[in-house]
Image 1: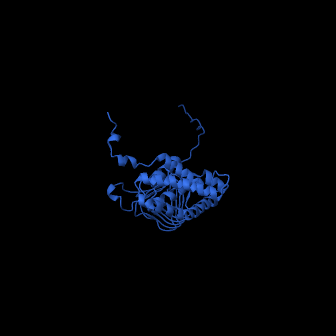
Image 2: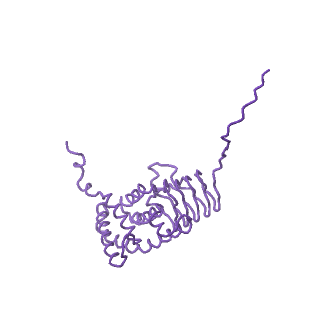
Image 3: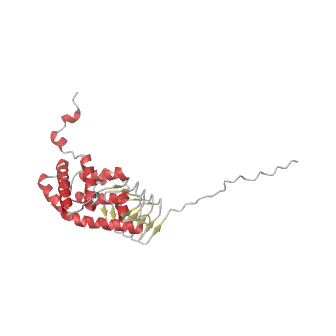
Length: 271
């Protein structure tokens, strides 16, 4: 019996990007952008590495179905934006280093912080998303998702100096808007109230203002939900309505503490 894949349209079969090639491109681009793993970070290294990266990206763009006559223009545009991208990521890195007391050096953040890696790949994937590149931006975000546990949709809009601490379990939806100087901890969900396909073209995810801190496992849902500037959202809060600027939102819970020591024996009276 013939395998059903061989009966499919051959052109469709050809237009399938390679997941392994995308993974290699992401890792190599990250290393190239910050000059990691090379003893000599001189012009010849950058130029040679850039050509290799361009070759891989060109091939994967064509396999994704991106118009062949636009591939060269897109690559040229991405090259022009590389400096801006690098500066944005340097600001992200600096924000993490300056805020997190556990960060002992810039190198430590660069090499060991999954949140920074997730932000870096998001910013690359977002540029492709803005240029209507099919499939590849999502492949990049899912590679990071599998590696770090951080799920950032490439369509989200994220401002400058973004800080993700720990990061595992974070979900940032497609139409999320995040301002500048936002800090976010593990388990945070910026999601939608509805998962209806009919809402695909509307804003479904929240807007987070500037200088907002969101602590672990907070859930913020809905396209009309706006979190005002300079607000702090405590751990485990569930928010589906807007919050004004300068708010402190927290979940109040009661904790009962009892002794584990043995209770004294009761007095037994015999009549």
